[in-house]
Image (tube, rainbow, N blue to C red; front, side, top):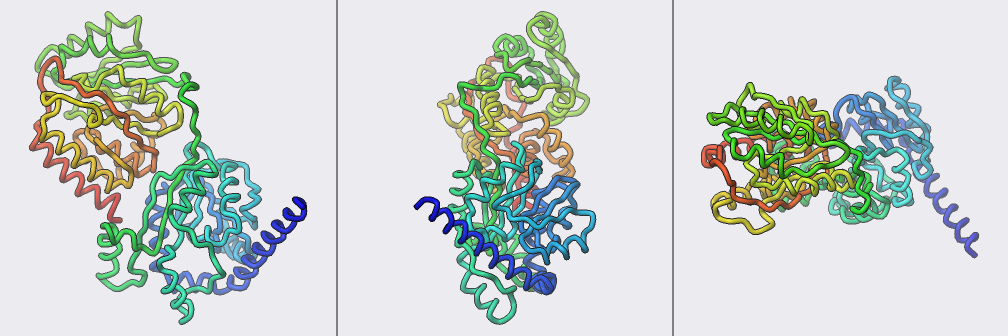
Length: 487
């Protein structure tokens, strides 16, 4: 009986595969004409993928058709696969610099890692979505991102009408998949969703109107739920149990310090050892007290315990200090520890574990979970921090509770990618928090908040001018919204 059911199932999958292949072989001569007729829609898909995928990446596109999307992404190495020999023949002719293969993704015959795997409008044709998603592990490294776009089923009646009047390419019957369906199927097959959303509520190009609707109105609740295009960005969920933390990674702790003379020794005394080696980098920021002299003194005293480097800051601001420290860091994992020690050094192993177990790729400190005294964070500061947390959650499509906590931890390899892409946002952040968070979100890194017990400083006073710098933060949010949300 089991063998009979297996044969019936295989027969069904083969029949489904044959129908899809026959349909696209038949439509292949007209495929590019349909793309041009609906160029406004396909340009938006390209825009989304170009925003996510840097040029020069290794890209695999599943259901590549005639290869236009893969070509638009300008990959360093691009492989497109499709069931239709007719479509693949056209793709090979049009784009000889790329690689195209006739292949059934359900039995993927590729065993090499890619930076990005794309299914643009393909998931609806799959006979067994779960089986296909399981195959993705053959082409995934821990840093690989899966990008899936599909149309919202809310649009089905209008799409059927458009097809009936010759405004949409004829389609075979497709799967009805909601965002939650995709999220569940990805979870079942060992992936987790980083970002998801919908876009494009005006599918035809009406001059001056459609662009405004799609770029602005379509990003604002509740209109952001009405988009024609739904998308999901996911990563492999390689988790290690907390009891099996990998301690082989080295760590660099960067401590920017300005007028923190009384906290320098405590920073080294209280800092826990982490990973295979812990490096400490002080960056002194033109202090008016004896911070620089104190750094040099404690570096000599603690040189047998820590690998300590000391630098004077040539520029201004915390962001400049952090960048200088990270530029000299040699560790696999980079950490920021504010020299005021209001975020305890003793909490840093929690950040190490979050990255070393694979639970996230960017650990962001949160001061708004545990109780804190009024002296440590006055009520107006608390309100401002919560406000910016909500703004960031909206702008970056990932949940944030506290964006302004100075403790932030990420992989050095990812920081180097943030630096490479920094020109996209520009040098707009004097604090460094937004630069890192926006850069991490642009790379679709998995970001998690790690609660810290925020404490009142024991020495000195804050270097922050709250009202003036709050206005700067608002301007930065408005600027970044144009670069990462309303695109």
